[in-house]
Length: 231
Image (cartoon, rainbow, N blue to C red):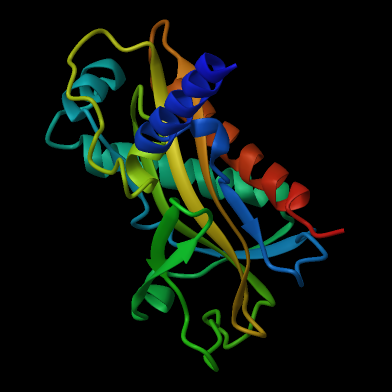
């Protein structure tokens, strides 16, 4: 019995030191989040959230010049994201990043070890569209990182941050790591926040595969927004 307890204690200690992915909470909901957006939503952050790592790898496979991959590749991601959001929500309002990035960057806690950083509107200030209308809720896309074999804990667990592998081995998956907040624009509070991860197995990789990755991300966001509702 003593030996068994020792083994369990050692296992617990290793888990605490290395970080057990299964123990993370990757979403958080405000107690007042009782209804997911349906039919209409505003979104901001899509101009600058997308970042492609391993530029040479993606440039070669997408047949885009290395010097242009960040501009052309992320523009494709942005356009695909907006297109898929318009399909999902009949009334989509796209707010420029400048509507929100003028506010200070803050940290939002999802878990004891998981924090996301993003620009959050100040109390008493609402985000408005070009006509001066105030959308009731706004999806704020904080970060959208695209790479190969990425793990979200290496970006958002502050005990492991910057620990992503520098290996140049042949990758198994194209990864998308993205964080976002559904913002109550009327009462200035975060209704729902999450960090998501998608792993897309690699066979050959073309622009259509990148399109599919973004489509999967939008589906994941919508699913989480519904599942995150406090019932």
